[in-house]
Amino acid sequence: MQKPDPGDLLRRNGSNAASVFQKMSANTRELVNGYLARIVKGVSDAETKILGSQETVEFRQAVKGHVHMPAMSFPVPKNSGIAIEYVDPVASYS
Image 1 (cartoon, helix red, strand yellow):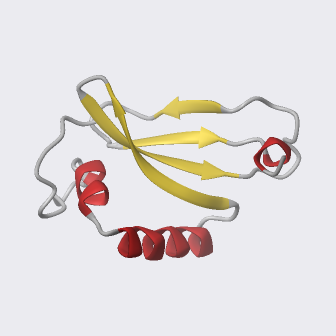
Image 2 (cartoon, rainbow, N blue to C red):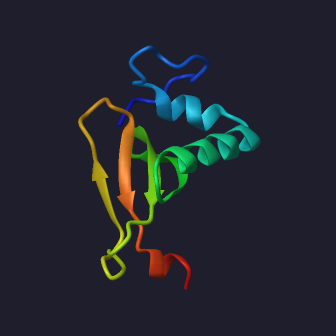
Image 3 (cartoon, one colour):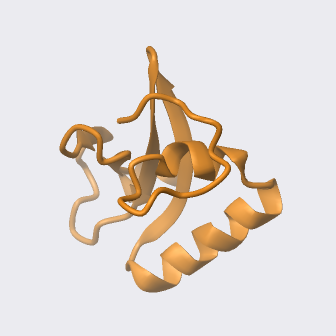
């Protein structure tokens, strides 16, 4: 989670990743999502989410063997700019 900023340049610690990701063109975000899918098995998408006065990057990942669990979000430590979401692969395709 992070406070929004202009997102012109990624900070060295990545703490403004959500703002930078949000500012990217749709084509660039699609390219980044493609890279993520190749690096992390099952990742299908990432997008910026606004939560109150904060923003984060939310990732979607299909996890083998977890077909009946509801979708959940797991925020990681404060100021990391990252949240992880479990997406039920069966529900995703229905």
